[in-house]
Length: 433
Image 1 (tube, rainbow, N blue to C red):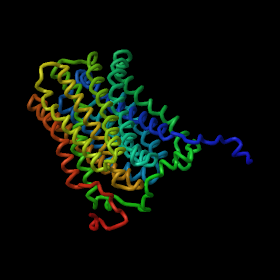
Image 2: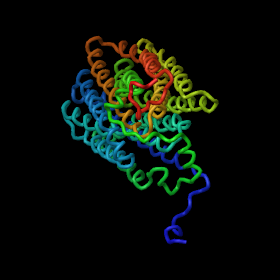
Image 3: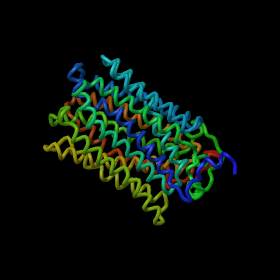
C-alpha cells in the first residue's frame, strides 16, 4: 500500500456530501442578503439623519441594482471560465469589503458608490451557486437544492432586521455595516479548503458520484453570450427574471419604508414584521422547489412540474395588490409575506429552468444574462418607486405591478419554451423545434 493511500481515508460506501456543498451555498446566499438588506433596515434612520428625499433613496437603491445588472453580464462568463471555487471566492471578497465600506459614506454620492461596488460583487453569487448545483446534483434534485440555497436569501433578510437594529442602537449604524460586511470572509475560510468538483472530491463515494452523474452527459459545447442570445430558451428565462426580480427588489428595499410611511413602524419595531415576511419567504423557497421535484418523482415531466408549481405561486401572489389599502399593519404584513413566499417558490423553479434547458457548461452564463435582466428590472422599479411615492404619495401602483408580474412572466416563459426543450448549442439556433 502506498503512503498516500495509507493516510487518505476512503469515502463511505454511499456519501451525501452534495448536501454539504448545498449548505455552503445556503450560507453564502444568507450573507449575500444580509449585506444588501442592511441599507433597507437602516433606511428610516439614514433618511432622518441625512435628510434624504424619497428620490434620493431611490437613486441610492438603484445604484446597487444597476451595478448588479452590469455585474451579471460578466459574472456568468467569468465563473464558467475560472470555475465555481475561485469565482465564488473573488466575488464574495469584493462584496464583503464593499459592504463594510458603507460605514465611510457621508453623502448620497458616497452611499451610491458603495452600493454600486456592492452590486458588482454580489452579482456573482447566483451564477456561481446555480452552476454549483448543476455540477453537484442530478436534474431530479436540482429544484430542491436550488430552493434550499435560495432560502438563504430569506434567512439573510430575517437576520438583518434582528441583528442590524441591535448593532446600530448599541454601537451606531456604521458598526452595523462593518460587522455584517466582513462576516463574509469567515465563509471563505470554509469554502476554499472544502470545495472541489465531485469527481475530484475525496469525500464523495462512487455511489454518490454515480448519482450525481446519472443524467445523460452534456454535449461538449462552449457558447458565447451572442450564441446564447439566439435561443428562445435564453429569452424565456431572461423575461421571467426581468418581470419577477423587479418585485423582489421592491420588497427588499422598500418594505421598511412602506411600513414606516403607512403604519409608523420604526427601527425598534421593524424587526418582527420583516422577520415574518422573510420567514414565510423561506418556507416558500423550499416548498416551491420541493413541489416540482415531488411531481417529477411521480412521473411528471419537468415541463409540467415546473410550470404547475410556478402557476400556483403566481396565483398566490395576486392578493398583494390590496396591501396598501388595508387598515391593519399585520394584514399588510401577511399579504406581503404570502407574496414573498410565492415569489421564492417561483424563483426556485425559474432558476432550475436553466439546468433543464442548457448544458452545465452554459448554465452560469445563462443565469448571468437573466440576472442582468432581473437587476435592470429592479433598477427601474427602485427609480420608479421613489418617483411614484414622491409625486403620488402612494404605493398602490407598485403593488399592482407586484401582483400581476408573475402571471405575465409565466405566460411569456410558456410562449417561448412551451415544452422546456433543451437548447442544442451544437446546432444552429434556427433548427430548434
